[in-house]
Image 1: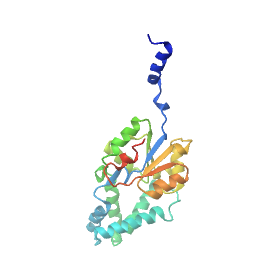
Image 2 (image 1 turned 120 degrees about the vertical axis):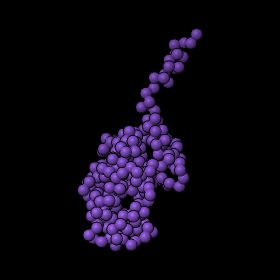
Image 3 (image 1 turned 180 degrees about the vertical axis):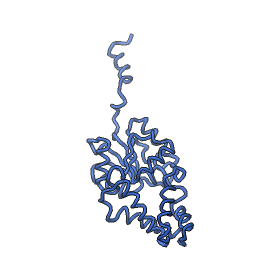
Image 4 (image 1 turned 90 degrees about the vertical axis):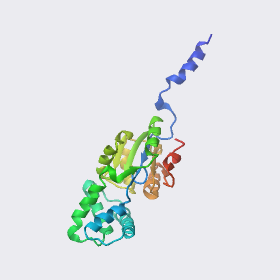
Length: 242
């Protein structure tokens, strides 16, 4: 016959609330591009296709380098600590297009930009990495709250809906809505407020850009992990301990 105390010990594990499990974080935040998904084909090829249609003679390799420099200028330059919104983000990308397809005739600029803006607002321009959904599902099952923290605008919400993965996230925080973009510290301060977090040490940021996704969140008290997409299961491996 099992004594009452023994019966209680047997029953206790069944009564523990999953919210009481000792997890190191309350929220896990993910960057989007380069972390959970990637543009397919690469942006330089799309810029090349559109540029050629409007008179550009630049090669894919030239566009690749100029796009890289334009991204640095307009995300890491003087605009780092400027407030943003949907209008600002659209104009930022217009400036990036101008600097990337630098030989584009001005008379065709608006139409070329409109085509590129629309192209990257559709889910078929993006591809999820193979380990994205399994990793998100495993973390959700383990009890973590999942957020997407991205330098993007409302196009991202449309893309996630089309990919049918909106339900994988408890919160979407994008720069155009938060009012600040990475790598500004204000982005992470606003993201913390967006999820009503009181203990920043319980927030984890995961991303492929070291400055914006790792250095900056760490500087405001978050934990952060740098994702290097060097293998198919890189994200799964990086978070295997959670």
